[in-house]
Amino acid sequence: MKWEAADEAGKDPRLAFQHHADDNELLEAAKAGCPLCGLLQELRSARLLDRIHSQNAGSSRPFKFQISPARINTSLRYISIDNSESVELEIYSRNSVSDIWGSKDHHPTHPLLAGTVDWINIRIRECVSDHEECNQQVNPYVPTRLLHVGQEDGSEEPYLVEKDDMVFVENLHTSLPSGGATTPILYAALSHCWGTTAHCKTTKATLSERKACIPMSSLNRTFADAVTATRALGLKYLWIDSLCIIQDSVQDWEKESATMCWVYGSAYVNIAAKSASDGDTGFLHTRPIVDMCSMKPAAGKTNCLLGDFWIRPERRESQSQTDSKLSSRAWCYQEMLLTPRILSFEANHITVECRLSFRAEGDQRPRLRGFGDTKKENFSRIVTQPITSDEERRIAFTTWKLIVEEYSGKDLTFERDKLPAISGVASQFGAAIKSRYLAGLWEGDLLGSLCWVSIAHEIEVKAGTYRAPSWSWASQVRNSPPCLLKALGSRIPLIPVYYYLFATDTWDAEILDCSVDLVSDEYGQVKDGSISLRATVLAGTLTLTPFVDPDANRPWYMFSTGDDETAPVYCPLFRLDDLARNFSGTVQSWMCHLGDGRVLVLKKLDGGLYQRFGFFWGWDYDWSCVERVVVTII
Image 1 (cartoon, rainbow, N blue to C red):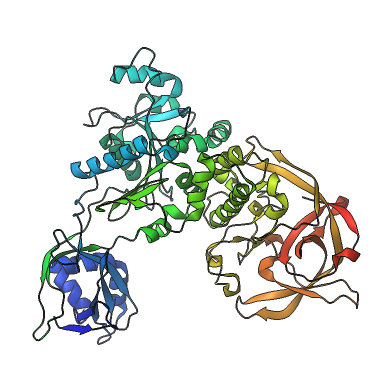
Image 2: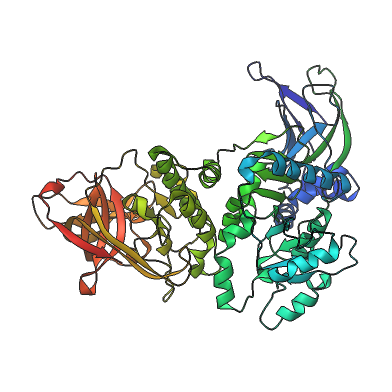
């Protein structure tokens, strides 16, 4: 191996050396037993094999190693010479004699070896005993049903337990005081991806059978791993949605989905199966690690890195929170916000996170929460501490809008679950801010809550799928991530719904009435809803123009009153809602001014009602000469 070192203006040297000449050499070395090449081949296998099969002779691409020393982690990047492909690795020494290598502990080869389980339980107990913010439940909630996981040695199969029977079951396995009321029932909750694989479910017909026995052999791998992990943690109970909710009972589903804030908020720990893309994948996998290597300088080199070291896949917590399949699911997004403690099983390591701190396996000291996720930090503060000022209340409403933006980009199997899948978060929010919930909006910030735009593209609206009134962000369809819209900022590409946040609230419109017709839960599905407001409204036509926004590659629309004295106003397509995207040519529309240039685009329906068509901001128009009227939007 030939080293090349280059100084960067006095910084630590970034060292690079060529590895194998091509992909075939890497595969041959892996087959011959080289642990490093085996790890690289495993991490790159899908892309590597596809490319090798399609390569012509002589087109192989050499790779190099690039070592980047840093204060916390020294990274080892395995990168192609042309920089088109890379694998990120972590390089460390167990007992470093140099500041170059970070000193870390080994990851055990299996995530539930004794030492790792001890580390997990210590982290959780620290949170339970020391973090007041993480233990705000005055009356711990016990779910309607829990899975009793059986004995840790596997001598007893799991079975389903109803809440009314739990005290009896506890007395069978422990010596509780009389009645058992003084000892809380501790349980874990599972966050997982359903995927397309078959699940063990509880139905009306199988409820009695599930209460008798659920053989481990009948569980998919992810569920079985969750049972194994719960046993290893010393807990007796586990909550899994498909087993603890009767799947073919609409009544039971509505009742239980309305309690998600309590199910996850009261869980002792939430097991997040982040490395499991579906039920068959599981999350208790052996971890790859490379045997100790030695590095010596090439002839004539005196500034190269020295010593013994170990190599493993790089831990990138900030990415793992967004790259896993679990993080893309709407229901799981809510679960991560609600639970006080999260035990995440990543592909190559474990993390324990609570409302105050974050610990990754191998860390020698705790890290305070703070990865730039102010939404989650603010949410925890809002639901655990009283709101005592107008400024705190404003921050609470802003936090909700940011949560909505991120949530709007998550996947749902059924569009009708748009509101139910965030109902637990809304329930806790409502209790904290003391405001009425209106299909995803808050009455205490209703005008500001109307200032959203839909930036999704290639919309396909499914007939008959009612989600929410047109004025609610929940009426919009989730689809593939939109293209980069540079004009609106870096957070836009990830979210189909975007909120305009204003430093001041200057409103011209006046809310007269607002209501929603609920299916059952006040934070869940709705049948319809309306908002009546008094505002200045300008009638005109909306016309598709031949102009295209060069940054967003989106067509523009022109609104015109037909009055020669009033200049037309232009707005891009992404400021129009889903239902407005299917028309071409010209359509009659109304501009409803909310205040300070913030305008709702409306379409008039039969019976004098209106439907929201879009929103835009910044129209410099003299609204004082426009008549104020009452409009009702549905």
